[in-house]
Image 1 (cartoon, helix red, strand yellow):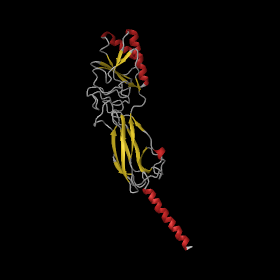
Image 2 (cartoon, helix red, strand yellow):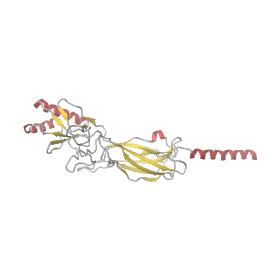
Image 3 (cartoon, helix red, strand yellow):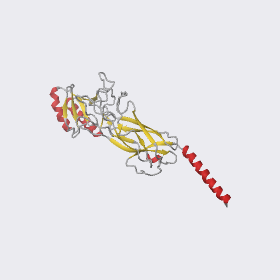
Image 4 (cartoon, helix red, strand yellow):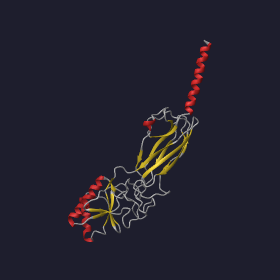
Length: 302
């Protein structure tokens, strides 16, 4: 009997040592869990289901708005194979913006990438205490978050994930018979490095097509549509410096405003164009600049 008990104790100790070795050999990685975290506090998670893809609109600090676009989530460290949530791990975060994304055909180290309210912290005794809030930049594009970590239980490999900062649902304005698309990067005399400058909400595209049709039927002449919005919307930095022009171009963020060059519209026809504008259902504010009209949808500031 004594020998049997000794065998049981040996098996228990051997099993404990083997388990400890397996914990040390586990692959610990960072997992980003969006709020509200349905699994918060759970000692294990399904690593295939817990992580989500993050997409949020750009912030808007234009002349008429001060809107922060934010998302909150919990960052945990897990055993990637068992889903065990690792307590008391420590995490550091860094941010980087992918080049040439969102419709910007230029890139430099000053490209905005947004910010976190905290960049390091402990996961706490239950593994769920490192909660952060990310604020998107005004500039659209893909931002990568890289996390590094340490754990007393073994090597922590960290992890990365990406956030797409974009206005969802924008579509390219198609080429049309009765209008020309102008102002794109690569055209003569254009210094704004944005080749995809004619993306819009689908409903706004239909109205612009109809406006051009009305004008062409009356005068057998085309309207010239300049900037609408970039491929993913957001700040349209016409001077390639991640800033709006101090005297204009604050808008063009959501695909519901457009510049129409009136240098090609004889003065006698300009009032008629404004009448056609109402017929096409574009009933927002009209602003007249030195070389163009700025049309936008009713109620829109973008």
